[in-house]
Length: 313
Image (cartoon, rainbow, N blue to C red; front, side, top):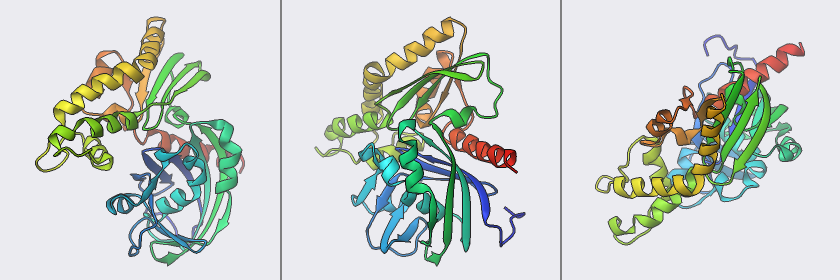
């Protein structure tokens, strides 16, 4: 970040507006990765605070900490598109303040049929207040690509490759031949379904109450099963994980294993890879887990943006 001039406005960026978390990687800055929560609660100028078109929002961790007053990308399929500008501005409001941002953006989407809707929401100029300070933000969407493609960009790909992206709202199964995609099938069940099941089945260890899905997600993302200081959901988690796998993941995983049998390399990406115990299971079955599977897509989207800008210089 040291080499960024204070007056620099133009930045390439990759934006992964996920169901579970938002990942924004602006060239020269650390990646912003925050939960996909939006709150309209009254709040101080915390990171993720945005005032835009006369309405105040908070995006990310602080929205999650307010308790129950949030929208989530995962609550509705269209939220990923409709809320995209608010979540993007919220992610920017986690970065050091700049008077002006002109973002040249490559963004990923689960359904590329919605690409023109997404561009319409994101493209253009706004003058939001980000974490208490006025900013001038221009967004130029260079390209919308299918989710998971960013993770492959710039990598040496095997001739035949199958990728399973274990996301929050969807599990994506894709096949590539000599770098060209042949198959891209989204299965409409991801980690969210597992977390929902755990919340219902932990009543017996939670005083008869359904578990808080945000707290369950938080502990699993931290790589453990300690729901609170005195509740460990390990046994419930293990049972639900088996169930989830059998009901929802067996099909895409078996398709990948069939592909491996016919000579494909099989790779896994997405936050689901990091679920306690799940990574080992995948590796035992011959999956290669990409480094930093959660942020791999956003990193590749940034590299794509840089390549597109360079090509048109």
